[in-house]
Image 1 (cartoon, chains in turn green, brown):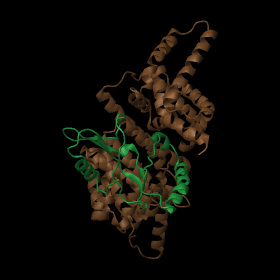
Image 2 (tube, one colour):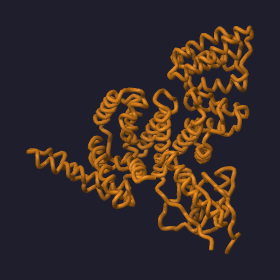
Image 3 (cartoon, chains in turn cyan, brown):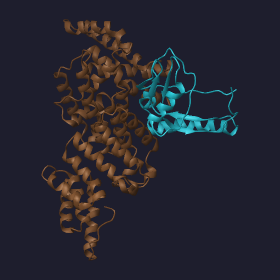
Image 4 (cartoon, helix red, strand yellow):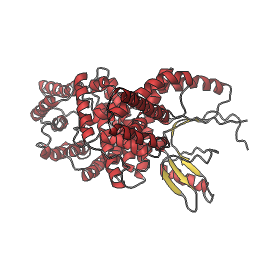
Length: 126
Length: 425
């Protein structure tokens, strides 16, 4: 079974860490992820930029583009895509095409701060 | 991370919201600060035992408010005649507490807290000192070190600033749209000042300067979380991130300034550049240009150039022209001249800055740029005069040392009988 591990924290707190504190946390985690990678168990790893860099699109009769992160708590995170685009406009366009003609829900578009594609432990599942 | 380091980061992160809410409850800066201090002390005792609360800011507001109420009750027992005003104010505070915790005032609380630091009567240095003390929670000692003044002088400066703010009668009701926009612009300018204090290296150790830059970035992100669709706030955040990304390459091992074109670009912090460019991209989608966005775009052009010689100076020239239109200033024209020198040559640039001589007669960089252009034009004697004037106006030893290097080169060229233009300038 493939599992996604989603990381949550108060970004105001993480943003208050010094560079050294931040690097220490990453280094501590890397010890574990390297081990997982050696066992062929680690897929893609990503660190997102802060929510201040986020843009959200909402579906309805027409698509709305809103600055800022997805802020509703009555909807749940159900999945994600990673796309390689030259600009935010292109990413918004890609997200809009994926979501076209769907009722409800939202896509939050957030640039990545760090990305390691990793090995794909199993290939696509469905 | 140790308990203390974690708690410290959580207290710092919660500080603007907690003090903002306590300020609205008590309408007195000192009282709000004291209440917050007391709450922090209790957090340091309580959190390691019971674990951190789910919402540290709410916890601190609640505990700080109760501690202040206890304090007043104690004083009421000791004092024969309590001030009615104090009691009725605290009654309001109690009724307001549910409000405070549901975050409905969150935005305006923090904006008000930031805004009281930018009172127009306060000179820039006092605004920065006050913001660092109240919003960021730096100690007076740390701020004094950043400004290279004694602790007691800084203490006085902050006390005076607080008195002015207390007398200024800041309105506590939620601001209207126009008022909010005005506050936002004043706060953005103050955050930029905090950054510049760190970036311009006008004093203090490298450590404290970097702390000021990081603090400004933190405040810009905070402001952006409160006002997510303001392109100029995005531009401000982008500008600070892009500038700060170059910090590791800006001074050499002996603390001397390394010019942008000589910097080791491998030392630039890529993650900050990426975030800055993403913020700028987001801002430009709004098609509502402003000075911060244009300045961020200029920093972005530099960030895009893998080597100094790849810099798109024509683009920078155009961006400075746009900035001159938005915000006419001789300093901007001076900066534009540096780009013009690259695109059209030093003679065109010199013609551009010569009329600025009177307005910028006390400005270090004016004479530095002028000397550099004259040197390129083989006008060594005039270059020497300009460099001498620059040294007299230098703000830091690093600035003076940098100009002295040019003078040494001129002296060497003169001794060698050649006046070859330095191709790097």
